[in-house]
Image 1 (cartoon, one colour):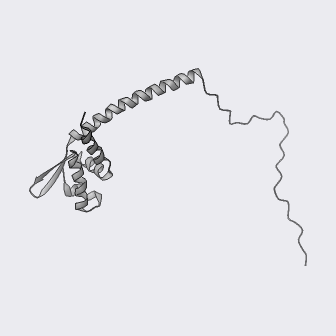
Image 2 (image 1 turned 180 degrees about the vertical axis):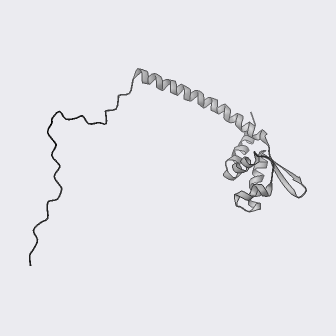
Image 3 (image 1 turned 90 degrees about the vertical axis):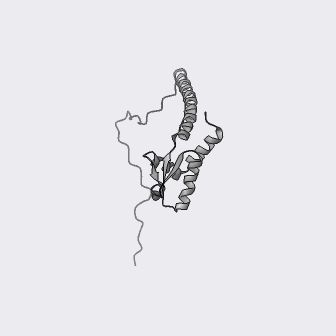
Length: 145
């Protein structure tokens, strides 16, 4: 298992949508900083702060080639986070399976009462039902001039 401080940095870095989108862009291969920044509609200095957070968390590696800086995904930090999540996935799956077994047993022992039918039973009488009276009567007397 990875160090708790390292995991804290990884999950904090991944908590931001822009940084998650950068990670997704980098899964397609190394990309220049300007290409990474372009779809995010922010200033380059603002974007560089996001890139620095990803780099500090060990998720991204930068390399300079001439005048261009390329970024590449560093999968080790993601693997550590995935292992941590997988551990807790097993824990919760076991708990949910136990809950499912319990609820199934309870249904077998104490079945839920059936909901009453939504259909109203037909009347045994063959007589028609009279219409309901209208709330207001006909027009009242008018005043002649």
